Image 1 (tube, rainbow, N blue to C red):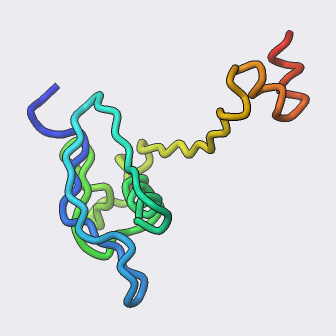
Image 2: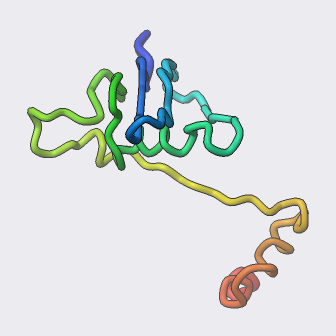
Length: 116
């Protein structure tokens, strides 16, 4: 590990016309750190992660992964962007306290595979 952050976000902004969905987020995330954004609906969490995943471009600011910009107009292949993955998960654990109950609540094909 180096002293530099794995992900550095500086002054990140995303606007849709006059609506400012992301307003100047700055954060450094260390290698191996688990990081999440918590906030109410419409706070810009998903938009921020979509920018970090390379799905959309920021209006202003920058985002680097291991010292390299996520979007580099001088490079044809955005290899850093291609290696960035976002995992979106919808939790419904309250009604299904065990893994077996969660699997059973899903698609029957999944439950059959899990039992084999």
